[in-house]
Length: 167
Image 1 (cartoon, one colour):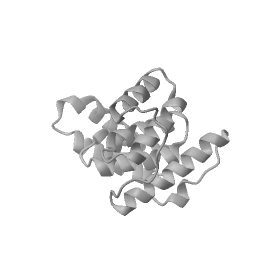
Image 2: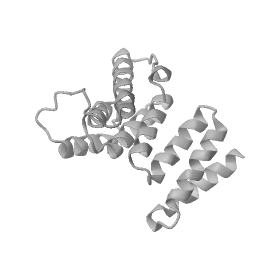
Image 3: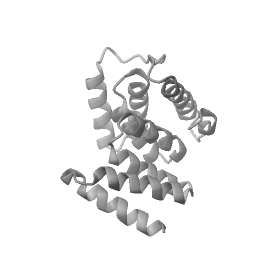
Image 4: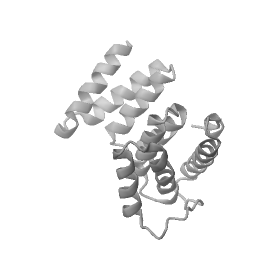
């Protein structure tokens, strides 16, 4: 994913600036191979676990716009960023920012190679962007990663159904 492809203007200028800046920094950090992330946000002294819990509560309440800056901060500032990138991607996806969500789901999948949920969400985003073949490939990867994991049975079924519907 090249950061130039992520530069977009959204209706809310503050959200546009945040998404574009953070996606560029996250992409740059991923390309550097995990070097320290340069971005920091005033976290009010909360640690990563607390910030994640706050963002998770906001997501559970449907307040994705408020959870997004926290999830993006965690993604950019932390070494263990797969779950954080997934949350940021989920916020972006729920806010209708499909291309940016795709980039964050790709970061999550890259950082946790056995994450079927990240591949499933990538498939959804790719399909929404009209990239059907890539969507089918991502969904098939989700199916393969979910295979043999009872906890992922519903996700595997959903990925199979979606992939079949795209053929």
